[in-house]
Length: 316
Image 1 (cartoon, rainbow, N blue to C red):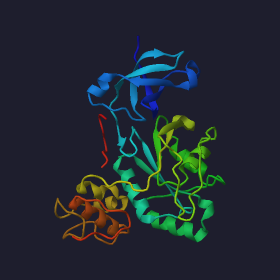
Image 2 (image 1 turned 60 degrees about the vertical axis):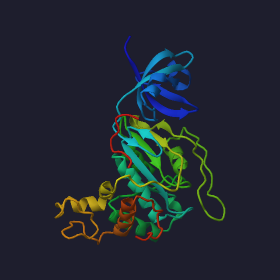
Image 3 (image 1 turned 90 degrees about the vertical axis):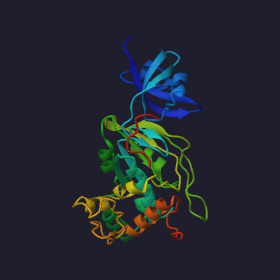
Image 4 (image 1 turned 45 degrees about the vertical axis):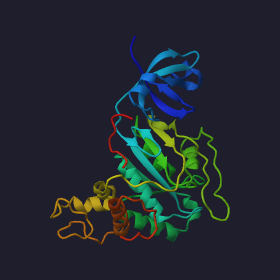
């Protein structure tokens, strides 16, 4: 019997929801198989993540059940939340309700860049921001090396262009960003058949509420998959200080012009450094770099105290 492989589209209560490759959705209840994991995966220290390509055994299409027997090597792994084989990370930040926090956004972009996949930046709730404010943010973010998509789930502005950018057959795109940024509303707009729960930002503090509780992949037009993820407000820095510079597109562009004088250059205004200090996010880079070198953490936007995420992951 030929091997059957499928894609993990959700994890809940210890079970994996898997869509088998080449099967008609009508061949099983709900178009998915509810799968357990073989104990040998646990014994080998292998985890199963949303986005993993897995080999199935003991398939019962009538009952909609199967078992995950093996996990294929991963191309990329987004660490928080864990999603495998991501081809594009879509960082979503709202222009209003709650207002955009530059330091927090920068930290989310660093986490996205560390995955090793393409990064798209979306400015949601564009209909709630003024023309001048939108222009100022676009110009600022272009200086960071990004061409942001201004979208409105309410009016539909920018949605066709964003959908076209995500329409990569077989690709997996992940929406990430702070709570209240409008990720679930955006996913509902991109996939009209969905009715994901959304909630307004909370009261006086204008902070987002968590409406997404787990990661799940949904089908987009063109064969792509898109994941909504639980919102969180403190993305992590990469583990190694040496990797930090390559997570800033504007810094990468400067370093591509030629090597620094010293191989171990920290890009903090060192002699012979090709980066210089006159780029927009240099203060943020310095803050993060020095925090990593101290072996501590620093919150976005906080004064410095005195003085990664893997690009490729073969196994879980």
